[in-house]
Image 1 (tube, rainbow, N blue to C red):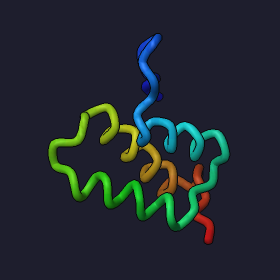
Image 2 (cartoon, rainbow, N blue to C red):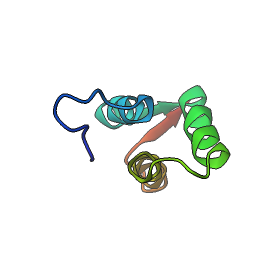
Image 3 (spheres, helix red, strand yellow):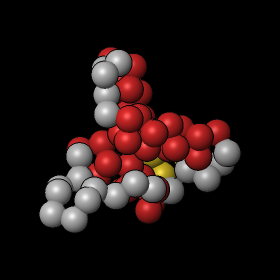
Length: 68
């Protein structure tokens, strides 16, 4: 997982992805926030886009559980 460079705070997306991957659980609300961010912003930073895709891939692979 990409990590913010030293001295730079993580982006809100990066912080959320780190929480999700450490818990291995994603709420429906977090899922909506991530999918809205990636679909609603075609110029999103590549690092953030890759991190969201990693979470979505982990859901499909059964590594992250989508919860209510």
